Amino acid sequence: MNTLKLSLKPNEKIYVNGAVIRVDRKVTLELLNDVQFLLEGHVLQAEDASTPLRQLYFIVQVMLMNPQGAADARDMFRRSLPLLLANFADEQIRNSLKHVDRLVSEGRVYEALKAIRSLYPLERIALDAEREEGDETGRKMAMGAS
Image (cartoon, rainbow, N blue to C red; front, side, top):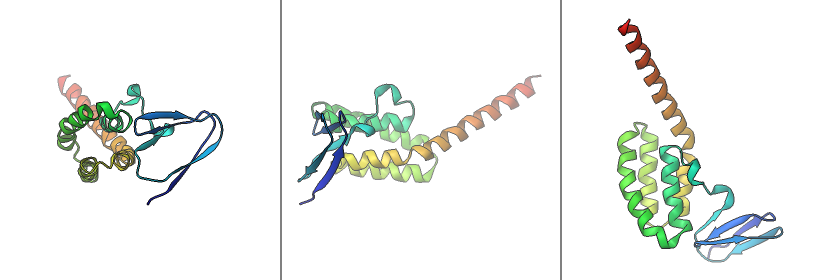
């Protein structure tokens, strides 16, 4: 049996198997069996899902936080993942996304979220490079148009 201890601050929330739990004082929770949970600090709000990987994170997060909507979120995940794989050239991102797919398939949603979060810095670099490339193409087109 895996035991996991979590310390929560007053008014902090934790999402456990779809239930939202808020504590009124500092507490330590001991999870004595396998459970799907998400700490409040790792919850992504819809308006913050502003990049492709953050959107994927939000979809996977729904699987964990809303068990009733998990099937729809899983379908959306299955439609989104091939598009991401096709649009990211970075092999580390692509390999990690394949790993995320395996984790989700195995029901290891928390680990999938953690893996997606770890890709945010690489995504930023890839998106910045794409923007710079687009800016350079725009400058060349403008110079050629003169």
